[in-house]
Amino acid sequence: MFFLLCYCGVNLSCFLLDLLDAPSWRPRWKIHHWMISLLGALMCIFIMFLISWVVTIIALILASLIYYYVSLKGKAGDWGDGFKSAYFQLALRSLRSLGAKQVHPKNWYPIPVIFCKPWNILPNDVPCHPKLADFAICMKKKGRGMSIFVTVMEGDFEMKAEEARQAQQRLNTFIEYKKCEGVAEVVTAPKVKDGFRAIVQVMGLGNLKPNIVCMRYPEVWREPHLDEVPDTFVSIIKDCNTANKACVIVKGLDNWPAEYEKQYGTVDLYWIVRDGGLILLLSQLLRAKAIFENCKLQVFCIAEEDSEAEELKADAKKFLYDLRMQADVIVVTTKSWDDNKDASFRKEDALEAFDKARARIIARSSSDEWEDGTGGLPEFNVDEESVKKFLYTTLKLNQIMLRYSKVAALVMISLPPPPANHPAYCYMEYIDLLVHDIPRLLMVRGYQRDVVTIYS
Image (cartoon, rainbow, N blue to C red; front, top):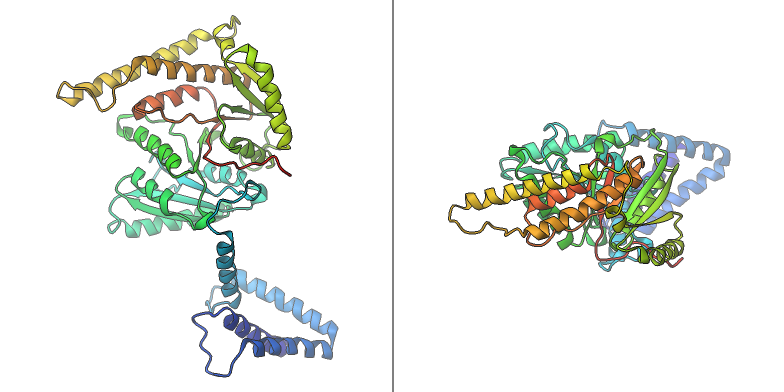
């Protein structure tokens, strides 16, 4: 029986290699054809069943177990596998069938680029924040999908080649340890933002290109040795928009729950701008995981006036119903923050944070003008009224989130785009004020396409 199985395996390998036109397949027998190999394999199985069908089934089970064991533990040598050629051809055929056209929202899958260690705060031997892989797993339904973990090393490509290979090995080890389906890539570039710009342009093939960039929020960025962090952060967000990729920024990764730490309460979603439904879809993917499955989803819609509240609430409920998503809809007006007279609502503390941020921007702008040395204007001419407007808007949003979502298991909010003609440090001050005192938060910026559909 095992001799016949051996002959069957040889014939099957010849059949696959010949059928798939493997470049390494060069048989000496010139009359060879894949049909002969297939016939030989079928004849071996047929003869085995003629001898004894019971022993044949036992032999096939034992051979399958041995093959499985060798595929897991066998490290003595690598002689190749005919099935690998079949997988390769299947992958190529699937990629060609996908084409280059945009996939329908029904068939949309998140393919995240997990941007590791962009702020150089963690030690060099840590490939990325440990909880960033946990977050990447939460973005996949039943763990299915692919993630790309990317590290950008600053320096010369030729000089850093060996160091980059070692970093990629560490990153692969980390992915295997976290049991996350993904691949590791290390890119060497003179600056982090240059490396990232290359990543968003060339990584991936066809419709298998990454569509979401995930990174952690730089909570420490005002130190003198981190003066490039704001420019890098804003550059990445702008490049995501230019490359038509979504962006997800995670704040509070140190507090991100592990797989066994179930959360209770609510997942609060502040839906401010239309983003193709990405923030809604991400909330559903997160709640499909055991970590957040016991949490209730609340959707907060921001209105300017009380007169808009009822109409906005009705529209949001209808939209969620059409999308088959269960959530409570709450409409909050920004005017309510200005008129709030509640004693427990500490508006003075909020205004103090506003004044400090405004003072830092004015001081930084004056410093940039003084360092110009020519007496002319700095690179950006910051309009003080515009700065006050942005700061006040983000302050009101922050206070609304603190009022309604202080104890929420997770807060999600639309990421505002960097304003034109505002320097990077201004945008960092705006975002810092927006996320102040919120322990665990996702900022989501969609891209120019729908990822959910109202059609069944």
